[in-house]
Length: 236
Ligand code: XBP
Image (cartoon, rainbow, N blue to C red; front, side, top):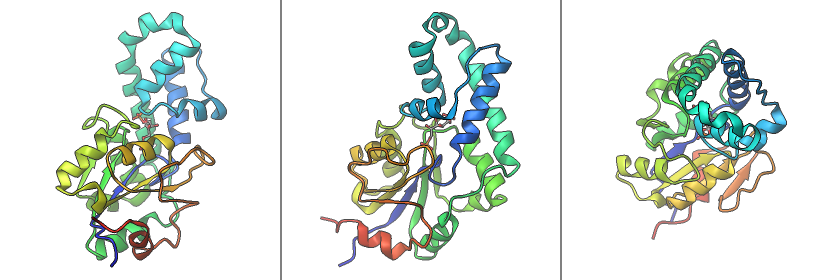
């Protein structure tokens, strides 16, 4: 008996598209505009990605590397992160980032097979919508039943909040769903919510600890709905 897979839950950054390099550049431009001497290079950013959520990441960086600024950071953080989001959305809306291999084909096949689709991300809603515009010319706006974003689930991965919210909105048990993720935090969040999870390694997560994932794939190219169904343990 094939598993009763009923829904796919997609992470965004690193899973739908390789967006973190564009996030990194947006963070650095926002820091410069706000007069901060901070520059996150790729190797540092890879370490900082252990913290999900842009605001949380900035605070964690300041606490570790520039604690003297923590006292004044709270006052400027909301506007600085909003500026970072504006810089990021402007970049992806112009098509700077494409969907990863196999993503659109799998989504269309899953819709054709009657699977329900949702987004479960810790990034800001504006970032997801801009990616849909820039990477799919708006086609993606019709793909998902809903988008569960940072505004909906403020406690970030590895906390399972965003996945529990998605299960509530779907009215499905975790075992009827499959999460697509690219990071350790994403795997831990899905597993904690009882959602089986498959990883596609991303530029910033290759080689990380994916304990708990059903499979670790290089990407979704040639990955079929049937292959995903076969990975999900039978219900019950
Ligand atoms: C990735 C994140 C986000 C982005 C930055 O989210 O952790 O914080 O790195 O976006 P996910 P924000 O992998 O769950 O898609 O600055 O909007 O947080």
